Image (cartoon, rainbow, N blue to C red; front, top):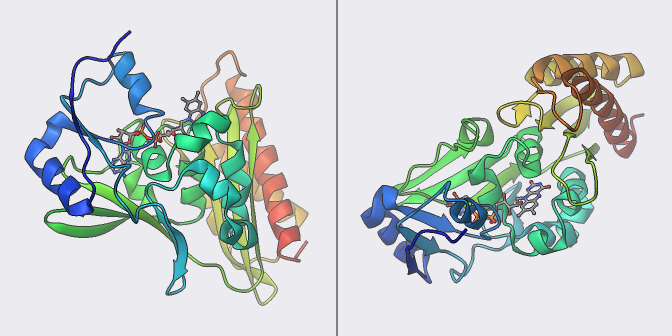
Length: 289
Ligand SMILES: Cc1cc2nc3c(=O)[nH]c(=O)nc-3n(C[C@H](O)[C@H](O)[C@H](O)COP(=O)(O)OP(=O)(O)OC[C@H]3O[C@@H](n4cnc5c(N)ncnc54)[C@H](O)[C@@H]3O)c2cc1C
C-alpha cells in the first residue's frame, strides 16, 4: 500500500527543525532512518501530514566521550555503533548488541534516536539503554531536558517525547574500574527480531559488584529493566548462586506472551538462562569470574 500524501521538509539545522516541529505540532513526524516510520506509513498505521527529515542536519551523528560520559548522537546508525572503535574498546554491551540488530540493510539506515523513540518492546537498543542507565536529551524551542530511558520508554510504541521535541543525543556514564557487559539474543533466524533477548552489565568495586544493569527485550509491553535482579547483585561478590538468583528475579519481572516463537514458559525460562549466562560472561570480562 502507498502512504497517504504528506508534505516533506528537509531542515539543515536543529533550530530549523525545532521551528518546524513547533509550528506543525501533532501533524508532523520526524523522519530519521525511516526503517520503522515508512513501513508504518505504508500500512497506514501512521499518516502524518508533514515529515521533518533530519538526515541533513550536521552534528547529530557523533559518538564521543566528554566529562566522564559517552554521547551518542540521535542519527548514529546501528552499523556505526557496530563499527565504532570507542564502543568496541570500552562499551562491550553496546558492541555486542549493535551487530545483532536486524540485517545489514536496516543497520545502515536505522538510528539510535529512531529506535528509542519508536518504543518497540522488541527493539534491542531499548533494553541495552535500560541496562546502561542511559538518559536521552530532548530539545525544543522552549529549551532542553534530560530524561532517563526508564521514563522515556513510556509504553508500547509510545515514548514520552512531546510533538515539538527532537531527541538529539543519548548519554551514558562511562565505566570506571573493571567492568563487563554483553547482549544475548535468541532469534529464529539471523536478522529477525528477538524471541527473547537480555542485556547485562556489571561494574566491580573492591571485589564486589558496584553496579549492575539488566534489560529485557520482547518479553513484555515495553523493554523491561529488571530492577529487583539488579538490586540483588549490588554489593555482593559474584557467584554462580547469585547469578542464578538474579536470573530468577529477572524472569519474574518478565511478562512474555506465548506465540509461534515459543510458549510463555519457554520465554520466561530463556530470560533466566540468558541473565545467568550474561552475568557470568560480564563477570569474566571484568576479571571477576
Ligand atoms: C526488516 C526490519 C527488521 C528489523 N529488525 C530489528 C531488530 O532485530 N531489532 C531492532 O531493535 N530493530 C529492528 N528493526 C527496526 C530498526 O532498528 C529501526 O531502524 C528503528 O526501530 C527505527 O529507527 P529509524 O532511525 O529507522 O527511525 P524512523 O523509522 O525514522 O522513526 C521511528 C520513530 O521515531 C521518531 N523519531 C526518529 N528519530 C527521532 C528523533 N531524533 N527525535 C524525535 N523523534 C524521532 C519518528 O518520528 C518515528 O515515530 C527492524 C526494521 C526492519 C525494517
